[in-house]
Image (cartoon, rainbow over all chains, first blue to last red; front, side, top):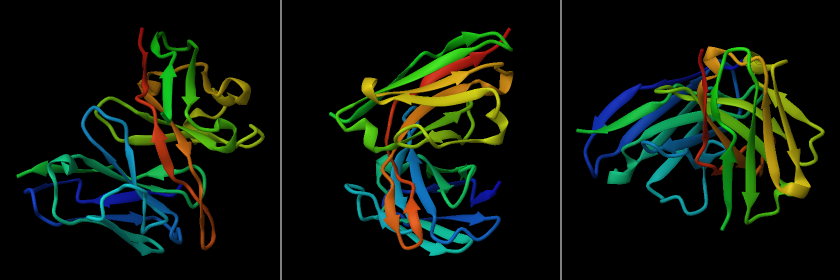
Length: 107
Length: 125
């Protein structure tokens, strides 16, 4: 199975900050990557699919980039609802695999 | 309103069985791939299985193969997960999700755009 490694595992930031989360695949996965946000006690929410395509109604402060093995999620102007855990997910092959998650905490 | 509602979780002994259900509403269920994702207490997300629109294609994570079966009934707008020979490490909240696959440059891209709230399975003696 493809291993997805996120970094950092956690970070502290303030409202208004820009944060960057990276995800590395153990093999080339083209652009077959999504990003999900999970707020405490809630189900995950789709943010980005296909590495850089913004899901409908997701704020434009979220952006994704990368291809091959290295991917980035950038959140500009962090909002209170963005303090959550973020996961990448490869959909290049089966089984689908998530990264271990990056927890964004309030500084 | 577009929604997914899971049910069927509970406490079961190791080696036991459980059937999870996910009822869809507000969209044409038969048009979408569907997925189960689980999350052990305090842990990250794990993709478990998916199924195509007519149930003819199914995929599983290795750790559940031979023990867990995904199925669907389009007439009932329902997705199922039959879980047999349950183990302690199957303890998790189980989410169903709709896969609104998008056309990409090299094929189809997963997009789990609708999620249920999940149902909790606890395997313990």
